[in-house]
Length: 563
Image (cartoon, rainbow, N blue to C red; front, top):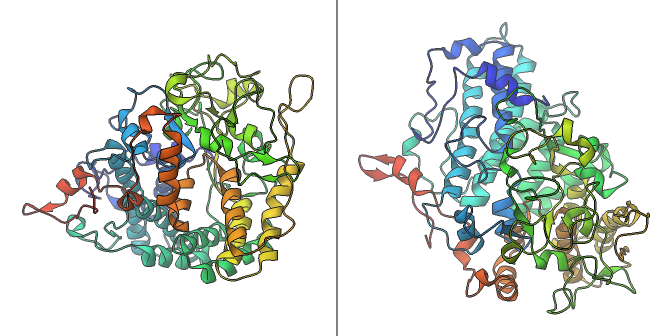
């Protein structure tokens, strides 16, 4: 399953379908009959193809950009939020500029990419469910069929949840839909998403020998994630408690263990997207190509200088030296910004595991140059680099691909890990009138791990910066707890594609993003005069999909308000 796409490329060559040419049309393009897959091997091959869409792009489709559909949501969850700039130079991938500045039109190709790739995942899942409903017990045992179907339903729930978070109301197409082009986008699909996840849990295993496969704990965690997006704290809480009490997961000793090739599929990981390189596919397409742009343009990589940490994000790691707690007062004050090695104020050590700063060691690649020579265009993207998905210099020959985008590597993306569960559980306590002491204890599990983790050091072994982090003694009230929990989310999972969606579900996206645009304008001139509107909480339905949904000249899809 580590090389999950290879199998699908071999078996599915005669059975691929695309929703860009015929909207969500699932008729096979080649002569092979669907009966070919009426066996355990055949169903597993189809399932492998559905898993392969988790990284967010087609295996060999270079006609479309790969970046808009990435599982990491670096565009939709980080660049569209206050964590990151697009980076690179202004002229490269200009359609991301529009997303960063909230000036997106329905013709934006990143919108079309996200839609297209997620519905490709849906379509593959629906095909599996058609096959499993037709196979007999002598072809696939009842237990094995239920297990295949359960994994499929979690995958379909994931693809629909991604579509819902980005676009809001989208059409629901399942295995029984006969005319998908007629289905309207007239409702949110949370009920359908929840139904798939609930139906899947009883037939999933609690542990899998093939690490890529979805477990019952992963499905429970995903259901809790869906509940939290809707503020259904009472429903999410028992699921999270079950995972904490009975899941058998544990925090890794070091924060950095969640971002290293050598420590992937570890004791903290609940749902992890598997990457592989140099595996026989064209261009190592199993290696997370959705993030191929997001590596330094020199030094540790050769392409392409996108996805640079914002000054706002770097400042969020500022700590009050006397207490070791976050600086909630002066954290983003002009003239007091976190910079490179010259900044001597106290900072949370997760800062230098998350981003590259001038003068600070960058993994084992040496010290990041203070002259910004590793940065493609410092005047556009500033001095900081993204660090979490890169590989060590010592791993270059075995963990990286050899094509033009040498940053593409075998470092898995940890989609849900135990740290998420603890902070979600803390959120339930704070948001729904629960125990603030319990919320504090959950947050402190994360902070104490950060405190005990190895820090970035200089060549002589001394800490590279003034690192300090301490647990909270108490939360004065629910608002105090919410503020701490929300910041802890940002510090722990920064630039992992969740920030924008967190701001939306917390109900503070408009306030936060307008303040960000205002305060960042002096730092990034292209943000001057930009504003965030309520309609920007979701993105436009792609015009190409509206056009493809026409029946007798009338589109089935309705554009979102404000676009």
